[in-house]
Length: 354
Image (tube, rainbow, N blue to C red):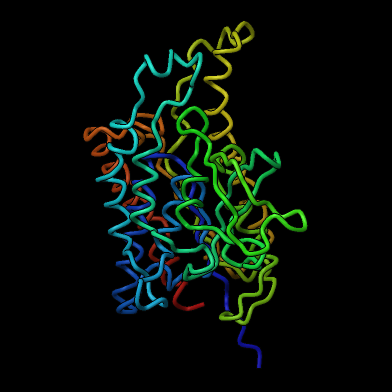
């Protein structure tokens, strides 16, 4: 008898402190599902979680196991939201490097000291390995040594690839000009052999996959989800929730004169363009793939992002002042109310029924 079940995928965009917004949505989703299945967390209701940058940190938080009971989540979705609310200021505003040290970007363009973030990730994740995570995950980064995208996953051969979760989170959030690249090691016993990376210098995965949904889809297509009796699932075998962080509001001053921009102006603008430009592209691609699904399966894909009229917060990734965090909380609540009126509850119910 074939008891194949749908594979449930959660995809989380990058966006710095704007991670508050998807964290609000997931907090609601966890509480909604917990009322119907007591004692569960968001990790119990998804089979693959993908996240880039701030979304990668969220994915790691949701999937980190307890120290004693390795089958249960250590953190709730509410604690994940509190992480951004309470720590955002110290990660960004309080860690801003002075102009003397940066020499106005001519010698060192890095805006923030990574020390506080690294200490925070070590306290949060300790020596947890990516292979210890509760469910399959996918977290992208860009390896400067190999000059290629690299995808941290929890389904690797651990004799060849193994990483501390804290290093995964630091790598995927090393946004150019914000934080310096992350220098980490592959700690697998056979690392460095057969072409496997040993030492890595990593950049934020947002430089190529700020919306990691297509990466998650590709990962799911090649995965055997044994708990769902579903090997190499097609789009018809997936339920997908994709959450944005309300980007796109950054300013490109003087764009009418962009044909005469100097190198410094382009250098300052390109990270924003690159990290924001892929979001809509991936959403479009997934829309087109979703249209190939069976017509009687209408609940399989839901994309939630902040409506344009509610993006009344600082457009940057790093403005974590109390005032802007409050603005992000308001935007997140408005987005949640919009989503609840546009199929979110129905989608969450489908996770329980599939």
